[in-house]
Image (cartoon, rainbow, N blue to C red; front, side, top):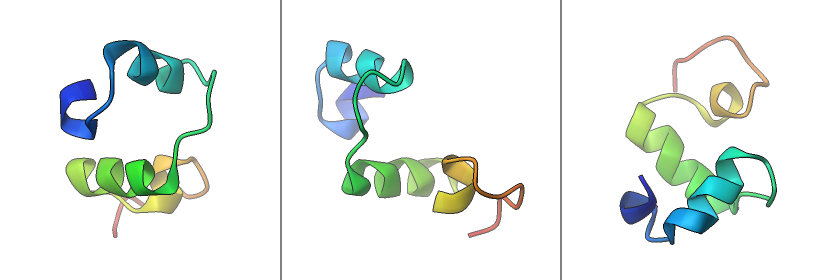
Length: 50
């Protein structure tokens, strides 16, 4: 996943553990990858649809 997001493994690990704020463009990339809405990705909605 780190390679897909074009970041280091350590940076991705920090994202997973909530140690750093995830940049907006990275969130968009993740939402597109998992085919879910941004609101679903960040826990603001139970609706997976984009």
